[in-house]
Image (cartoon, rainbow, N blue to C red; front, side, top):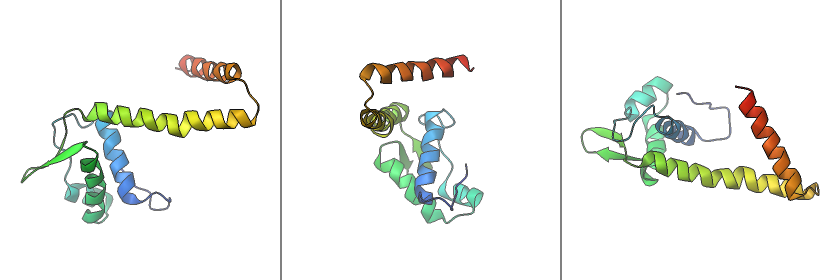
Length: 127
């Protein structure tokens, strides 16, 4: 886990995204404890309140929860919730932008699909 203070994205959001990604990829399984705000702040050499702000974002999204006196834990169903969130973001960030740019270039639906298939095939064959 690391943060980059030189980019425009706030540090607390970087922390939330990295914790979310760690949950999504299985580093932290559902119903297991995640590192404390103090542990993360010491690791990254940042203010614990900044870490807490990032963690609270995940609490608000129903990804993690607090067990009083024990710390923060990954909520059951968190991976599914993250997948659903990311699929929605994928459409908004990539598909809608792709279609918008393709329309500016007067590309047909078939041309777009062909490009996607080519990219998919290229990626699958690069492994």
